Image (cartoon, rainbow, N blue to C red; front, side, top):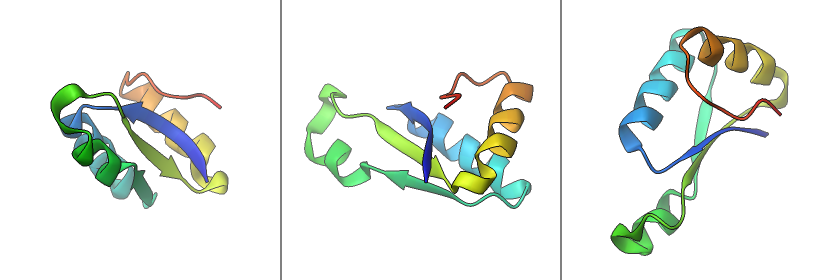
Length: 72
């Protein structure tokens, strides 16, 4: 697994996951529970992860959509 995106923006996460799903890329959201537990301080961002073999394709999709993300 590789980290594709790290953010506190739950709308962006939802949109990115839908974008990836449309191209048959399964995304996993990590740190969701930690982010909720810490409250509204937004100190712990959520991470969107994809499989290693899908990372490059996912990066190209986000580049095309002009979404800032982790390029590895």
